[in-house]
Amino acid sequence: MICRTICVCIIYIRISTAIGNEDSKLNFTGLGLKYGHIVEEHNVDTEDGYILKLFHIPGDPRRPVLLVHGIIDSSDTFIIRGNGSLAISLANKGYDIWALNTRGNRYSKAHKYLNPDDGTFWNFSFHEMGYYDLPATIDYILNRTNQKQLSAIGHSQGNTHFYVLGSTRPEYNDKVKVIIALAPICFLHNVKPPTSTLLALLPSVGNLLQTLGMEEVFSDDSVLNDGIKAICNEKELGYELCASGVFFAIGGSDPSELEPDFLPVVVSHYPTSTSRKNGVHVAQVALRKSFSQYDYGPIRNNVVYNTIVPPSYDLGKVKMRVALFVGRNDRISSIRDTELLRDRLPNVEYRLLENKKHNHLDHVWGRNMYQYLFPHIFSVLKKYD
Image (tube, rainbow, N blue to C red; front, side):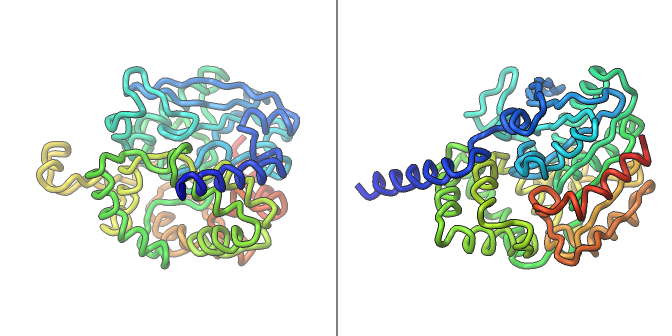
């Protein structure tokens, strides 16, 4: 009886809040159409059998731009702000927009022969996203547009994939004009609490989930995700608990950019699924203070890598142009950690954004980014057109 009451409450809250904002109910295609653009849906096959959803807003095929989202996120993050979003703003300027969904999220839970209900489907981390997802997507876009290069914009872990790509498959460096790295994630030496505390706990949580056979996390149809949405959509406490208590605590506080009325739109699209292994790999990077491949432990490492310690990614091989965009109030992608990254990349420009409150999530969800951020993005894209 109690369980039934909780479920009814969750359903009621979700329905009542969704009715209040149409954008909460629209997917990437629906949002694109609402804000004036045709959206095509493409499927991209990777070398290891994953089938990725790639959304395309047609523009000038000579100016393709690839958008890559962060962890437990999707392509929706680039369009949920509507006319104030990066995807729509770029499309309005005539760019040919391609928005990737990396393996495992709500749009890319498909494989040629693996079932998402089986644990083997989820045996991946950001390494496979950089090594398999990006090359397949880049080649697909360049083939469709008949171009030799594209520009790219990544947010958070979406940038990590490019460092993996450039270091492990260096032939792809020449296919990227520039990667604009918003809130870049590579080194996590100087992450502040409570994020540092969460990262310290993740390996233990990951081991527990593995024991329970839970390889997928934040599935859209999970009780956890339903609970998150129900709590965050609660009018009286939702903003304090979710925006102030989670988003601002982890990524940096900037309430002027994430207003209460927009929170239901955010939580209807975020979070979405990824693998347990992906989260653990991020934690390993932070705890080992090394941007390295996945650590399976000495015995298996020796089988997989022929060394008891996982190899580090060689950032010196990342020859593509990288433009690092750093927020002064970003509690995840800290100034000190992005400076470490800057000093190790051979072809880099570094932009510390002027707004002192600019946090980790403002890059994609901030309501005034057309004023504070997008002009800088446009100038970099134009520079390398």
